[in-house]
Each structure stands twice: as C-alpha cells, then as structure tokens.
Image (cartoon, rainbow, N blue to C red; front, side):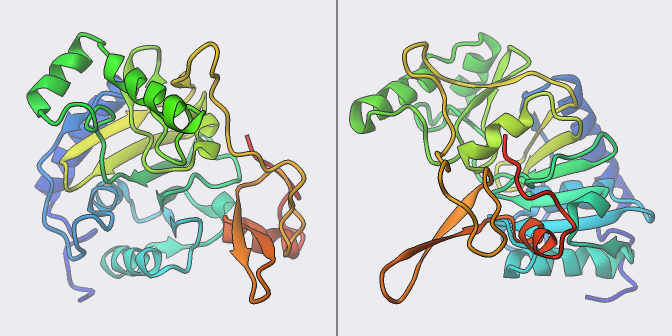
Length: 284
C-alpha cells in the first residue's frame, strides 16, 4: 500500500456519505441504514463494512485498535490495522484503554469502553429476520410494523430442538424498546455489554450495505421469553490458565493428552493482567 494514497484511503465524498449514514443510524438506534458500500482492498466478508466506517471516522489524532476473535494478532486484524496505518499514519495500540477507535470482529473488549471511545463492529449478516424471511421488502415492512414474531419463532425453535433459547453468538437484541437488531456475531456473553454502554457502537455490513448503531446510554435487551430468560455462557468455576482471570470469556483449548485448558479470549487483556496492568476479572 502506497503512503501517497488519499488520507484514510476513501475519497472525501465517500467518507461524507458514510458519516451521514452513521449519523442517521445514531438518530434511530437499531435501525439499518442503507449506504453505498465501496470496493475495498480486502474481500467482502472480511470486514469491509467495519473498515469503511473506521476509514470514514478516523482522524489524525486517533489511536486505533483492531481485534479479530479477541486477538490483536490475527491475520485479519493485522492486515486491517496495516491498511489504516499506511493511509493515515495514525498511532495503533493493543491496550483497549489507549484506543479512541476500536474495530472488532466477533468480540466486544473485556475492559469497559469509555464515553470518548467508538467501537466499530464488523457484521456479516445484519438482518435478524433473514433466516425466517429472505425477502428484503418484507423484512423492511416487518421492522416498520415492529412485527418480530419471526425472531421469537427462531428462539422458540431453539428451545424445542436444544432446550435453550440462547444461540452461541449473534443473539438478537431489542434496542431502545423498538428495533430488533443483530449484534454482530459477538458471543451472547457480550450482549449485556451493549446495555447502557458509555461508548458509541457502530455496526457495518459491507456486503449487505447496511450501517446501524447503538448510541451511548441506550437500553439494549436480549430477546427472551419469561419462562426461558436470556443467559450468557456459564464460566463459573473456570479461570484463565495464563492469568487466572475469572468472569471473562474463555476459549477452551484441548491439549495433546485430551485435557481441556481455558484461556482468555481477549488476548490483550490477558497479557495486561499478566504484567499487572489490568484488573484480574471482569465480565458482564
């Protein structure tokens, strides 16, 4: 990537159009705002929506953190960070507390975000009703009429098949008591972090050409039934084998002898805890 490229890669008209869509998304929490998704130097499905939001928002004084599946060092995270850095010259970091702009795929950082931070989530499928209704024109009408029977039907089917309404990830949420949205494919462990969060959360789907948002201090409730309440993954009794943290989202790693070991999914927080730079626990 040439350092002579336009600042933040996109032309100024494209950035203004994306920012206008983001502002509309903030004004109508949870509503999916269409935008003219651009071709990017990464494949669609690898975070083009989040990347376009990041490039439209980033300023010269920002500090960028990019994570993928909880890691700052995955191929996707490293390549996105390299592209943004090469076309902006902004500082990058792994410490969530240092970042002003965080782009993420599949996780909300363990450390609570502040009011002067923005979290950009990469979204593959933004439509929470897509599995029950493939027609875009119909899903638009269902959202307009607040008809979310299809979303509850999916939960009911999970209860019938698996005995639990909770999905492994991307469990739908109702935002500000109105729109139901797909909270990116984050694990349900992260859903409570969206409720009344201090940071602005923007979600971008490049392939589906949609932007939506959860403004700061907005009510976010995971869909559930009275007799089958929403619940996050049970991590009680487990601790990270590297830093000893409890109450955080853990990966299960199987050793050569078949025994299971649990490690922090948020690798930057785990590393910070090992050097004494972060609290020993957390979680919603």
